[in-house]
Length: 190
Image 1 (tube, rainbow, N blue to C red):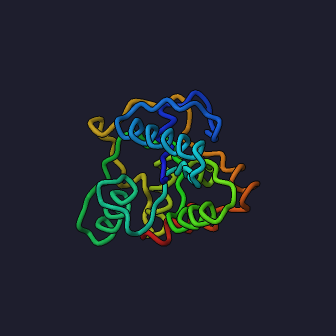
Image 2: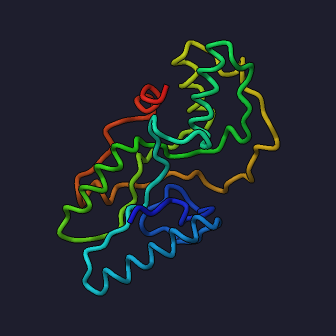
């Protein structure tokens, strides 16, 4: 199952691991948590079933409604003279962004395992939205602070702890680790 870090909701600690409390706070998170529990039930009945608890994963194919693509598309438009500013809400929100291709390799590795288990799939490194945007703008030869504008209507409630994954279990058990860091990811997306 492609599960989600959204099953942890507004976690009371960071990083989150397979042992973190499942306490979703969104409808999406609730649906993923239900599926996550269903996978566990099937596994108890002898099925080869695992949940990959995926933290944020990006690629150039990411849809335009997500903040990472909004940042990339707006930065490119600014560089071309087609936009005047990048409007964002909480730029201090932390996410553990990884490359989707690396995460697909983690899924494949999980499927090859003789022992099905649940695994957090993450980089283990948290970055703010500002960090991500700064790398994008830098890649395009621009200074983020010259173009960034705060838009309160886009702000979300603050989170108690950063959403960062502890992927030590999948590294220990299956030898998987991500091959790309945030700078690599930004280079692919710009």
